[in-house]
Length: 122
Image 1 (cartoon, rainbow, N blue to C red):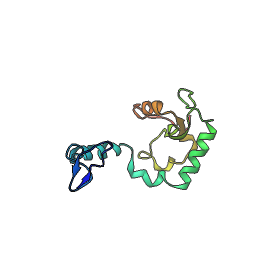
Image 2: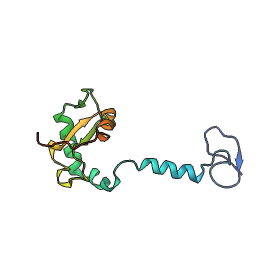
Image 3: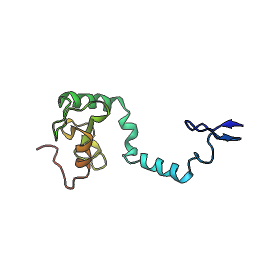
Image 4: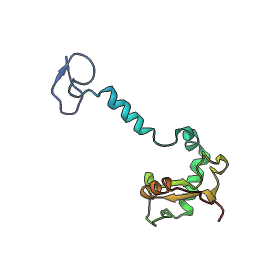
């Protein structure tokens, strides 16, 4: 017998990591996994590449760390580099500096949900 691994729980269990009260249901675990897969994972390897990291850093410096929609200063995970024309529509523009802008998370959501074509070269 051992104690449940849930923080502060004093229930004893014979097998596994958690007591019946703190076990995750398979349904909620599947739901949580589904929620994680919101962003475009077919491009996951691209977003981990050195060429993307270098381009992303350049965009951050070019835009002076400010959201190009609301002007808010952003840094770390709050600094989202947005593709005006998505990679799905035109993979040739994925590293084009004219197709990338720095946005805060709130403005990034608004831009992602915007309807209509954006022109890369004004």
